[in-house]
Amino acid sequence: MLQEYIKEDLIFIDQYYEDRQQFFEEIAATLVSKGYVTEGFGEFLQDRETNYPTGLELEDYNVAIPHGDPQFIIKPFIAVARLKESVCLYRMDDPEEAIPVKFFFFLGLDSGGNHLQILKEIMQQIQNKDMIEQLLVAPTEEAFLLPLKKL
Image 1: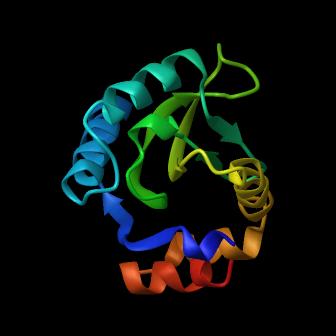
Image 2: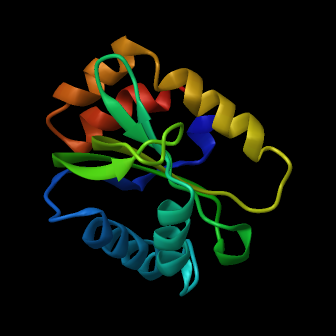
């Protein structure tokens, strides 16, 4: 199910950002320019992350799953990013604790009823150490996409 939402033109690897705000602004601008979301998505994403953090501290790495509101979604998607350097986010389960995050799964889902199933599947997959290790060492976007196509 996930593979139908993961878009080849929304894979971002080894880019550098000063902080979460810059990263989210640039991702949102890309999503707007490619016709996936409407204006306002970026601001919503920033506000939502501030009020409802999406950082997950796992055993060997940290991941975040920021997601937008269906009102901004034109075409449903999952954008995946591996940053060159981590940016600081707060933990979903402890909003007072900041963690460095390098992996991001941005969800842009419409109001269809399968968003909880997609979120559940992502939560399962990000705990798959083999997949994450493949994503860590993938040298190109094409190589990065290979394990994601198996989802």
